[in-house]
Amino acid sequence: MKVLVINSGSSSLKFQLFEMPQEKVLVKGLAERIGEKIGKFKANDFVVEKPLATHKKALELLTEYLLNPENKIIDSKEEIKIVGHRVVHGGNKFVEPTLITAEVKEKIKELFSLAPLHNPANLTGIITAEEIFPKAKQVAIFDTAFHQSIPVKNHKYAIPEKFYEEGIRKYGFHGISHQYVSREANKRLGKEKSRLITLHLGNGASATAVWNGKSYDTSMGFGPMNGLIMGTRSGDIDQSIIFYMLDKMGYSSAEVQNILNKKSGMMALAGSNDLRDIETAAEKGDEKARLALEMYAGAIKKYIGNYIAQMNGLDALVFTAGIGENSDVVRKMVTDDMNYMGISIDSNKNKNPQKYNGDISDASSQVKVFVIPTNEELEIAKQSYNLVAK
Ligand code: AMP
Image (cartoon, rainbow, N blue to C red):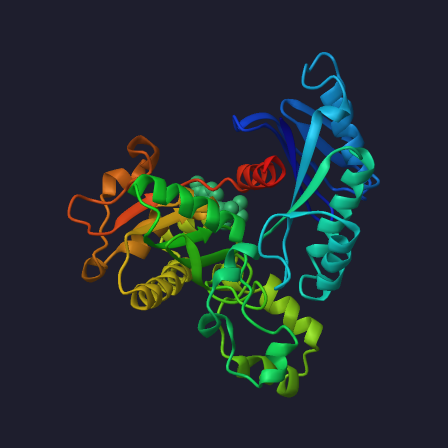
C-alpha cells in the first residue's frame, strides 16, 4: 500500500512516498520557497526551479512526477491510499494518530494560538492534499502526542490553577522523533521496559526521559523555546529577564519573542547556528566558540542528571538529529566525566558510530550509548498505516 507523508511548512513542503508495510522509500523530496518569485521542487533526482505560487502547485508538480510513465511510480492517483501529515501541536486533544475529519481540522485551527508558526502551515498541507488526493485517507500525526503520557507532576506548572484550566502546561515537541528513536533503542536493548534518555539535537533541540516506552518528562514545555540551548533559541532562562527586557529596557513583547526565538542560543553565543562552523572556530582557538560548546553540552548534562534522578537509573542514552547524529565533539563533551552515572563511550566508536551499529559505549559502560538516525517520515508512515490497516 502506498503511503504519502507530508510535512508542510509555511513556505515549504517535504514529502516521502512509502510502500508499506515494507517501509520502502519510493520518492523523497521537497518544494521550497513556495509563494516566492522562484521556487524549487525536488523529487528523487528530478529538480526544477520555477514559481510555486501555492502549496497546491507543489503537490500538483509532485503528482505529475509520480504519474510520469518514465518514472514508473504510480499509474493513477488512487494508488495512494493514505496521506500522513505531520502536525506540530495537538494540544491535549490529540494523543494518538487521528483520521482527519472536518471536526479534526476545526480543532487543529483552534490550536493555532499555541503554534502560530506551524499549525496554520500544517493545516494548509492537509487541505491541499485533500483536494489533490480526494480518495486517500488523510491522517494526522502530532508532534506533541507522544508526550501526552507525561504525568501531571511533570507537565503542570506551579502557577494558579486557572492557567492550567486554560491549557497552560508542558506539551513538549519532537515527539515523533523521540518515539521513533526510543523504539529503535529498545529493539537494540532487546526489551520494551527500559529507562532511556533520548537527545534530539538539531537546530531545535530537546531531551526526553522515556520510561517503559512512554514519555515521562521532556525539556521543551508550553512552547518550543524552553530546555536545551538551541541553534537560535535560548533554552531555559530566568523569567525575570523577560520582564526586565519589557519593563526596563523598553522592548515590545514581539521583540522579546523574536530575540529569544531567533537571535539567541548558539547564534548569540558564537555568532552562528551551524555547529560545524562553531566546532571549526573552537578548534582554531576561538574562545567564544569554545565557551558556546561548553554551555551547549553543559545544558544537556543537566537534563541527563535530572532524568537519571527521576527514573532512578538509565539503560541507554540516545543521540539523534543533525548534531546528535554527526557531531562526535558534542557527544564526547556530553558524556565526558559521567562514569559516576555509569556512562562512558569508546572514542574510536564515537568517531564512526555506523561501523558499530550505532553503539558507541565502551566495554565498562553500564549505560548503553547509542547514535540512532531519526526518521520522522517513516514513523509517520508507520503510524498512519497502522491506523488505517487496523
Ligand atoms: P537538523 O535540524 O536535525 O537538520 O540539524 C541541524 C544541525 O545539525 C545544524 O546545527 C548543523 O550544523 C548540524 N550538523 C549537521 N551535520 C553536522 C556535522 N557533520 N557535524 C556537526 N554538526 C552537524
